[in-house]
Image 1 (tube, rainbow, N blue to C red):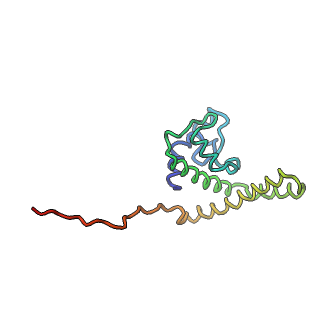
Image 2: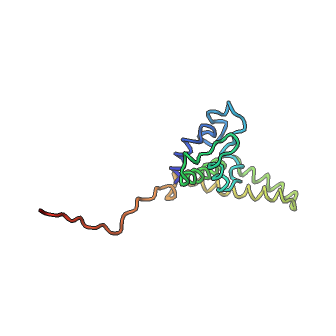
Image 3: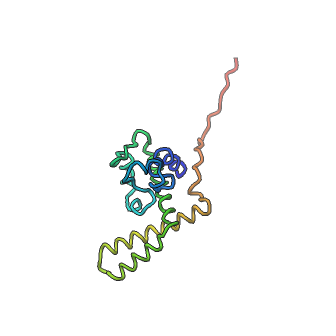
Length: 162
């Protein structure tokens, strides 16, 4: 699933969003403004359904990819995007963001926005650390393709002699 998602992302998304998820590294970033990156905290806050809807219907300048990507391929892209996003977050300053949010929450313990920011930063930091560990060790069984199914019963082939 991860490999299929990466392949589809590389075919349809990197032109604008960059192969590392950074829109500034996309091939058309210098021509268009407002292209969002795929490796920032704003993607982590979108649900899988939100991303599926964007891939299916498009958003702003981004066209619909319903004709290019089957539903299974869209879900594979979403799964790969999640791993890419969290791994990128792990290589950036997620711990610093978490510390800053904790400091803000400590200063304003009753502030709902500070609590939400802290909770989101905590989730992203935990997921990023886990994904970075998977990527550093080369993945695991999670990244291996599922073997092809084999039939339980194979009928004998009968030959007719003449």
